Image (cartoon, rainbow, N blue to C red; front, side):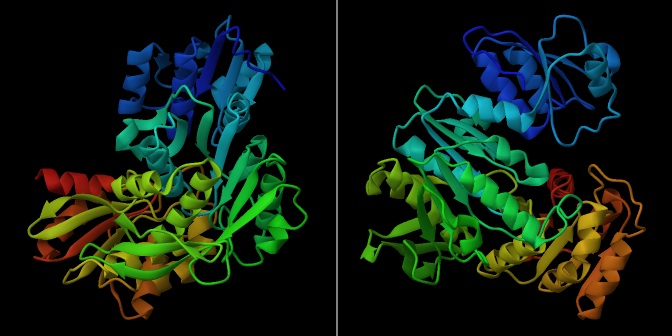
Length: 459
């Protein structure tokens, strides 16, 4: 494997540099003095920011972007072998690294490296931990899979030995990381276009946990089904947390304010800590906060700074993000694209005062929609009104013949009012007629459905 020499910065080229994770690593290397070039399919604000920092970015991707003098090409799991730049780099014999391999090499330069993994909750937990570390003046370097206002984007380059990174299980990419501290928030069936069953996913997370440094710790949600399979026999410390059960970190006396945000008392090894007040809604964020508290205590952060950071955290971009008000209705956007995530978002919405809950959902990928069709219908039926957009294909082709109409029929079987429209403009016209005062409108999905709410609020 090619090894990046941070003592002698050279020329790296990123295929898909505008991606949320790729752009972050490119920004880190730019600040380390590397020459960074890259390409993407479309221009974006992220690309513009990188150009302002000194990166050279080509739109679109093309074989001629691979030029002599490139020392290494970086690519993501979303880049297929038929990509013209991938092919050109292979033919030219240029060394190549995956995004995860590069992240792993960057993390090796930090003694207190923390990788936050999980099928759900990793972006929010990484962001929440970042807020606590900022409150503690820990000056961390951060790479997160979402936009965080307190760091002005998805990357922060600090000068301490602390590095916090979100770690993704898709294609086993997080196995390139060897952190001192590993956090595992959830382990459920997902990415079934890569994994075959839950046992494979559990094995992947076990391999991730085994990469944790022996002088470090695995912080794991003890409410994960069969979590012992993941941690059995690990040489490092194992710390458990959970809402209900005999865990190292748990909580008592939970209560919610008028916005659905929780207050609770953390309990560490049977000892009650000072009360914590969150500024993000939902019980699932109490669980995320317990993971953050566990990590922060390992790093020596005081309780006062923990509470300060947790309270000041108002959410990452597209995680129950308040967007504005339309005809007296609140508009929220959320990244939820798995049944468990949707259930958590709807549960959080139930604690927010409203008349009706309207969910505009864009399924992501054909394989996920097929695998969880019944589960999607069940959890979405918890809304008063559901509007479906076309499936966001991402990396896939529709070889299985599934559509949002299939999901609509399943949702209607639960007696829930549900509609499907093939275009965003039709969805917007429908919502303008349908929305009423005191409704709570949530645009939901991992694709570009957020544009519907943004567009409506601009009218």
